[in-house]
Length: 497
Image 1 (cartoon, helix red, strand yellow):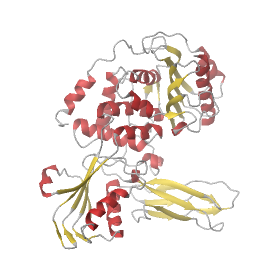
Image 2 (cartoon, helix red, strand yellow; image 1 turned 180 degrees about the vertical axis):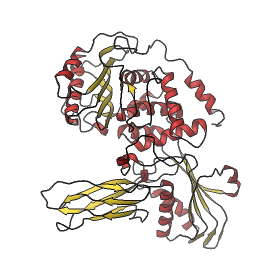
Image 3 (cartoon, helix red, strand yellow; image 1 turned 180 degrees about the horizontal axis):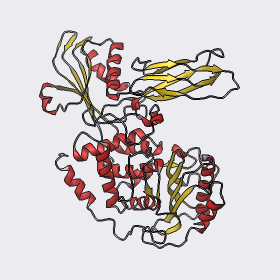
Image 4 (cartoon, helix red, strand yellow; image 1 turned 60 degrees about the vertical axis):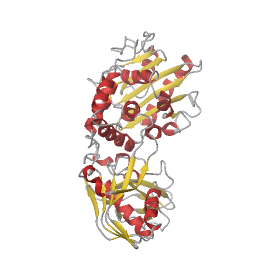
């Protein structure tokens, strides 16, 4: 689509009338949908007030398929949603980008072949594809294998030129505002870049198979790349001791400090974030080519300049086409993948307003869509797409309203299919087992420190489908206590309605 047309298209979408006959809930005594309030939350209130987490802040909304509120407790208070925020952002991605949207990552070359030598540069232009990883490829190196084959099949053993990675499709801000600094070493808080590989992590393996008091062995994917530097200060402890995790990437570097203690015989895997993802991408490609016998004599360069006007000097060698957006939305919600959330957010920004894609403009498009379907985004606060930022705020009633509205919109089947299933799969695989709701609740869970949330669709014993939103903020008891009360609430709804 012509980028000049995208703002006009978005304006038409955002100014479209909300679905007829559905009024926004304004208080605990007003309907979410076409129905009316039939319960004031007495049953839910008693569970909360008699439970161990009674001093936490709770918000609960239960409605039926018509939008009638069956249970309501603090429904219109602003709450922190944690990863349930992904329901808001994924709905916008589906409806504004479309489930068939695909990324295209091209490999260009300049120059010419001279016997076994290619005399010229290579250019990879990032499009923001988050899926070059094991979620959708048996080996993420398979892309580099395909690209290296382009040279080996022509007998080329040396490239006398530079390898350039262009990441101008996104801005250079690596994280959304407000993320906690001590999360940034881990896979769930990696940097974003228009040119990303292996979810912007190295996959560390630790094997405590030595003597007590010695260092465990380590190795990492891909091929123990020297792009990262591990300082291994870990210690093997006696077999009866507990595993204590300690990983920290030094800020602004690819030096990772390992200080875990591991009982003898323990095996641990951990994906750890890297700095400068675009450079990681092209550095890994260069090293892979070298392993295959294709030497690059020039420099590895990360470029942020828009090269569209220079395309005449480049020849397209290959273009990698990603899996469709529908598959990525499933990964985002099913496994609560923060990386996909933030990459898709910047993609939405770039596709809507033109590059570079930014978090702020992506959120503007998301909140515009949510407002157009009736949510109160004037009161809400969105700081990211994934729910990691503590400053995110939304009404529980609006979370429930969105789930109701989506049932009547295009792509609902894709959206529902992206949800985890209680006791069976995704982030809910190990919850609600041996419960009446096992296999009957389809939803999204959320967790950050002091926040536990759950929202989705519950098929009850009578065969009707309820929309459930459970939010717990500011709790000091164990998360297991909160989970148990969420389970009681779901089982109550399952048997009552």
